[in-house]
Image 1 (cartoon, one colour):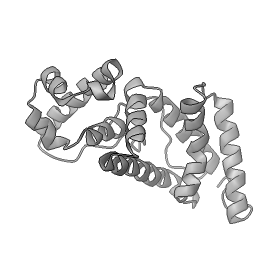
Image 2 (spheres, helix red, strand yellow; image 1 turned 90 degrees about the vertical axis):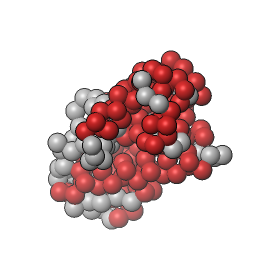
Image 3 (cartoon, one colour; image 1 turned 180 degrees about the vertical axis):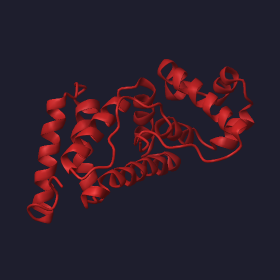
Length: 201
């Protein structure tokens, strides 16, 4: 199974190093909803994870880098789509996986923090771009069997309604909402590319 878009495999390295990374991220994930982004200091995290602050800085030179890995290396939530030839099915299941990931308190807090800091913090701006690139590339892998590949603006048109519903409306994203969003997205793609080029495989 492909890795969820809110996850990515750790870089191959010394198993002991990876265990340390995993332990730190687990502790950070537990602390973040409790103390918030500003309260998640390296001093607190080092104490709770039983590592030195130097170790934290070696892995994550900035807090933005730590928050990104909290998002991309998050735990698996629910089912994640396999690559498929039906664009509607892949897009629908992908949005459901996104909904599940964003509903996890630590991931939700990390996403909001990185987004809020991006205007005045270059590290956060770079981190936000990295998240978008990671997710777009992974979704295109899922869509490859259909022959459909999407670009940045087309990607935004897919996930935008769901994030607006969650973060701006503060409302639940139902399966019906996702179905409607995917239908509108496919209609828009057909308009941009020509009928029949963005629909089911």
